[in-house]
Length: 121
Length: 107
Image (tube, rainbow over the protein chains, first blue to last red):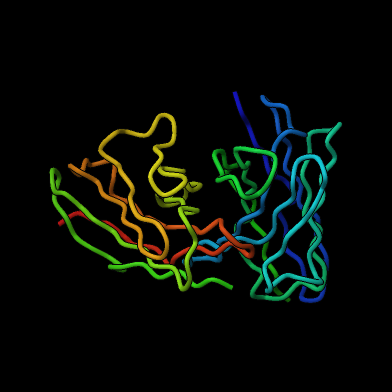
């Protein structure tokens, strides 16, 4: 059974940093691209970043480029999102999602339950 | 970035109704579009990928169509569990972008 479990929830001050993790199980992690998607309170969905399965190529939303870094540890079946220079508008539930192939150009098929990031002083 | 629009933004329907939601891209995206269902407090669920392919386990009352810039999600006979918000997502050109959502509620 495919499972994605996000962690790293927290309250952080503006300008601060936070690292999210997504522990994957039930599939060959290195064979699949992964993405982070977020949802601000009461708002719609926003794709944040994606990373391919084997060559580690990455893409970002303009709103986070230069501040967030996506990475993965394939031997440990874990996806990460390092978030720096956080702003109030980064407050959201962050979901990790699996793409159905090695690149992010395949649609997603499994999603985690999300982890809440709150940026506030 | 490619802009995605959806219409309507909300609709009220009855059980058994046929429901159609449309999504439009600001430029051609071939058939690189997915449809997602989200219920309050839950993660999004994939319904359709590649514009018209039904995700495994999704009821056949859901269908998708379209290519290029105009896409449609149809629910052939609305069921009580289908009341939710629906989003389209273009995965043609990053940054990938979602539509603003269509909320389907009970009439």
